[in-house]
Each structure stands twice: as C-alpha cells, then as structure tokens.
Image 1 (cartoon, rainbow, N blue to C red):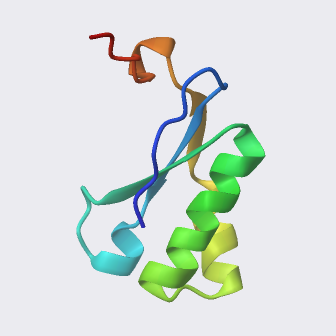
Image 2 (cartoon, helix red, strand yellow):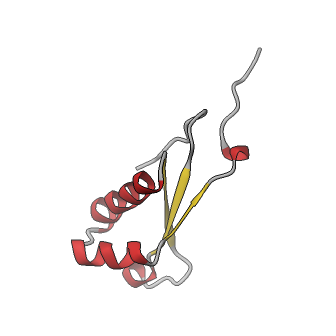
Length: 81
C-alpha cells in the first residue's frame, strides 16, 4: 500500500518497528494520516494486511510506535508552468 502526502492538510507519521515480525532489527513501517489517530489506524491496517498480524500483535507494536507531526517541508508543492 502506497500513501500520498496531501497538501494543505496537517500530516502525521506513525513509525512502527517490526523487527519482531521480520527478524530484521532495522526494519520499520511508516504510515501517514491527517491526525495522530488516522496515522495509527493506517499503520494498523498495514500490519494486518501486509504482515498478517493479529490484534494483540498490532496493539503491542502500536504501543511502541512513534507518532509525530511531519514538517510542512514534506508537503508537495504545486508546480507552476
């Protein structure tokens, strides 16, 4: 699943370490949303759909996740011709 950053909306990122699932200590997923809850929900969907995590695994991983606002410099700029 690929997400697109939307301009003119607040953006949050949820970073979840998934080393318990993949056995790769550097692996993590990132999900974006217009609110902290939206970013968290997007991450939960990724964990369920892409990694087959059950509800208890998802809750445990989300508790350790980092959710923070993304700076406006990350927002796409409108191209002017």
